[in-house]
Image (cartoon, rainbow, N blue to C red; front, side, top):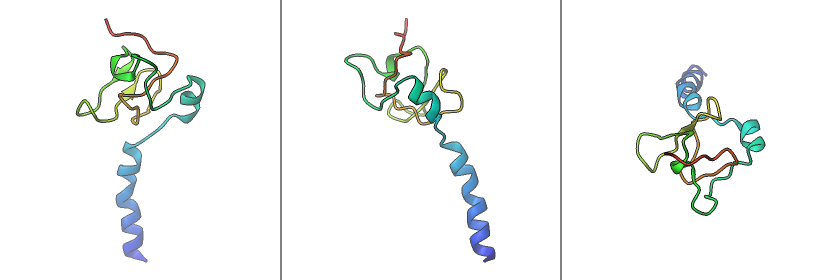
Length: 80
């Protein structure tokens, strides 16, 4: 029982690192695929992950760390 409790506590930081803002994603019609040449990686709102292929964040989706660089939503705005 004690080992199970320790394992559960050890997983809390891992779960806390991966977060999605489902309500905001739905409102902004987010999807994990690009819309033509529009993708999160080319959007001014996108906050890149550790590498170009990693999930990142978005200034529009507070606390969301699972935004795909290949994703798209209606808030897309081209990087200058």
